[in-house]
Image (cartoon, rainbow, N blue to C red):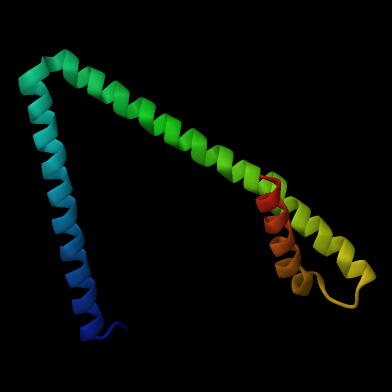
Amino acid sequence: MLDGKLVSQIQDISRQAGATAEQYSGVFGSAKGFILENFGQSGLIAAYIAVAALAVFLISRLAKITFSTLKYMIIPAAALAFVGSFFLPYSFFALLPVTVTASSLILLFKG
């Protein structure tokens, strides 16, 4: 099913990804060794807690942005396109890009 050229490209990409992952795991391993060497086990636990807190913060910000986009842009745009499809001779899918753009501009100027 797959020709030889495609299989070789897939193998090359997987080797590059493996080398990159190994490089980053080496960085994490050396950082772990540095923390253990200078701060001990309690410093490593504190670093894990700090990284986990940062990850939770970033995930919560991403979720907030996602829900705000849904609340202030996607739902109003879909509602406008639905209402517009009744009053204009255009379909819902033809109006949707226009209403998404309008909602984006309103959200942009609203601040």
